[in-house]
Image (tube, rainbow, N blue to C red):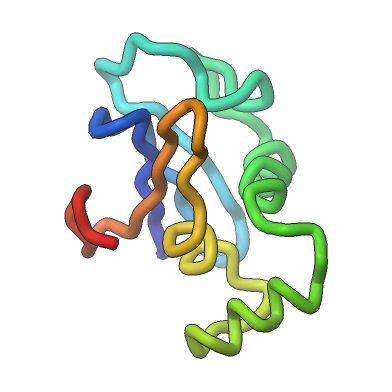
Length: 107
């Protein structure tokens, strides 16, 4: 199973999980801030399709750019976890994403 942690600033918001191709998202139990997205509401587990769409929309639409990022990191072009974690920091809302084996300040 792969995991990707989601943060607002330095606050852990929740965890994305991919178990055999089924993607899920769960907020941490004590999180009381705003949802990451309206498609990922607080208090309920969103459908896998909504979680996948949220992650997919963090990456560029241009397939050649996605493929280049994947090649640079030795990944499958369909792999959402590493390109999302290594390339995405939301400039306005301070969202950050990282794998469990990385520290919050790692780049």
